[in-house]
Figure 1: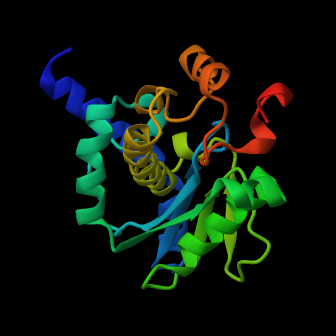
Figure 2 (figure 1 turned 180 degrees about the horizontal axis):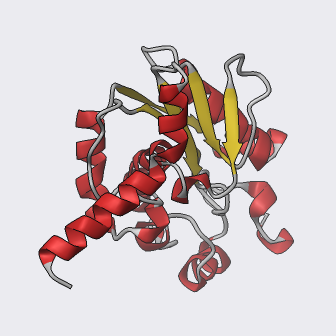
Length: 213
């Protein structure tokens, strides 16, 4: 595939992923916000969310579900999305809160925080897979939204890069669990570290095998 063909394919992909946003823009909604989370499954670290409002002339190619992108591509898009966005914000909930109220409710709290932290009030919110009952704004929950809406995909990239960088820093503070490579997910190296060292302060107690808690 030539460079021109790749670019044309990316343009087509962007048009597909703009379908939710375009319908809302055409209905008179100016500020459409995408919201996503990263870190619901790991054994350690926070759940991190992002909210982002993209402009109606958004044309950045390559934005997609963060899980489909290489770390280098995510890093590149992270800076470009922030530059192109009308505004963006990050939310988070720490392991203690996750253990206290469960990961789904902690995720909802962090998503709500991210939306409320935006300096521009959204006219409509697009959310990946969940609804936010405490958020008094028009909203649409989209299953697999990070692969179907460019705003949600952009939020997934902002959340993913933010959390990954933090977990790389946590690896320096709490070595032995391979956080720098697994970002807190339950890999073999992570479980071996748990068996050898026991849990550290950023582990989620309710996520650990009983013998580790």
